[in-house]
Image 1 (spheres, rainbow, N blue to C red):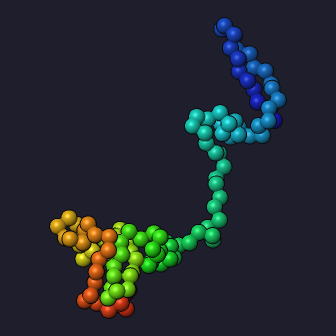
Image 2: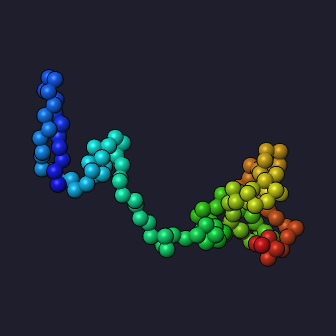
Image 3: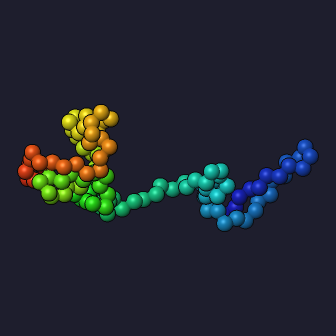
Length: 119
């Protein structure tokens, strides 16, 4: 648990053993590094994290996180424009400027039944 401090007086170097709280050299770097760093890996409990598929599935029809609503024959379905654009060229085109739907938060849909629209 000793760390050697190096002090310079004029042209002369003096090395003096000094008791410190550091157990390893990496602890010294962690303490004095700018910006602050950790020399040890941060562990994360992966089993508690949901998979991407699970997160997207949970977000389906979630009014709190949705940024668009489709009213399919009067039944609201909540969705996310980004996911729709990634998964469908049709929606990618729909949400571009020239279409009326690109600026709407609620889109009325009457040509489909609810079951086919949910798929």
